[in-house]
Image (cartoon, rainbow, N blue to C red; front, side, top):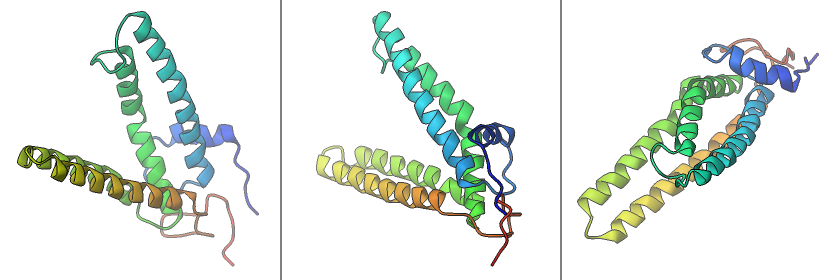
Length: 170
């Protein structure tokens, strides 16, 4: 019999298990915090932008309220987002460390763009081509991860733990 998980419990699990890589996370445990944090991010960005503009500052200025809010939010959510993503992947029987792939590919992509700028500064076509290639790779990776995070978990126990929905294998 499948155990129901409320939105509140799904969100609380995000914070309760903020530093837990072990185990599995259902789709709801992943997507509820993602959606809540997206909504909060929009609200905070609008508020910070309003504060910046009332102070006569550009939101892109280093040290602006917008930049500080985005930086702090990113730091606060970095580890819990990683661990819930890892547990979500483990629910579909994929090693949670695969969740590092987007970060590594992003860093390699930024490095490739910087390298092409430094090496081919006189040839903007190479820089643009490199940037478009990196963007295409990131887009494909984004789609693949969205699909993986949306898949139903392995029915029954897998090598990462018991089924969080308490379903029995057929």
